Length: 355
Image 1 (cartoon, rainbow, N blue to C red):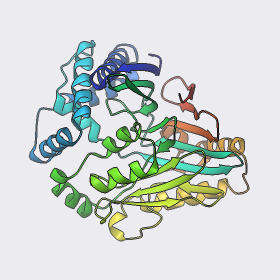
Image 2: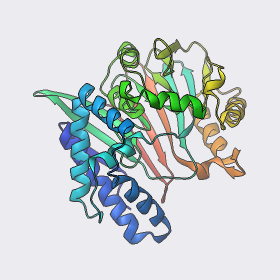
Image 3: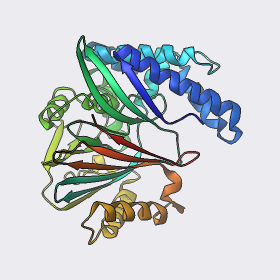
Image 4: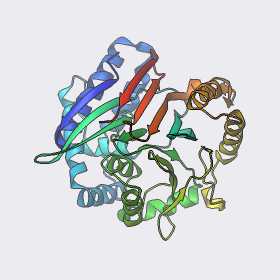
């Protein structure tokens, strides 16, 4: 398959175009050379060709364009990049935007406080393994000013949809479930909300926890979420609660080790409980038990990988449902680094260092 590490340079349109071309070429090759995985090609073809601009998603797109015009440039660039590939069908802007909305992954995360910083382990799980891409990005935000960051993202989604880091911090995201009635209420106010993946994309360009908190306070999210945000000298748990007054609850981590799965730890209201709520609690309990007694980054990584290979979800070991695992080392006076393990197809291990 195509190398899952890419370099993207230029303005928003240009990095979007490069990312779109990558995924277009990837899925072209997937369709032609790997018959057992062609179902992914046809699934994404249906979504990417979507022209049914319903009112709710139309309002959501309109508001995103108004609030974040630079991301509309990326949307247009990605659309053109995909259509420049030999993917075999024409992608619509609205179809690609629909893919930007599709993020409901399961995840497991561990943060360890070390003697000189923090170590973050995270996995991206769902109902099976999916391709992901690691991008080293040089974004020209204005003439003479460039921002650098690393992103891991899902097919045809915004950069940072899985995890990301820049020279200041690393972050991940755990999707939080909610029941159908709560979801309907959130969708009813989509014209006043911003897609969940927009926030992780914009976090890649930020420097401080105050910036992250401010964006979630200003723009209500379409879906609940949780982030760990890890700096060399401090770490935070950030719960994104779409219907709360502030929209976000931030907590500085004071314990030596912290574990998170897919439910809020500070909110027990039933509206944030869904069909996977009990499984999330069980997975968190088992992950926490696995981490008992660890005190080094090496131990966390070793036991985290062991957990993925032994914990069973619906009778299947978790690694079979895991697209990637990510291990961030965040230390004082050193560049942030990440070891990325990708499981779809041939297993790949990619090392990245912030700049």
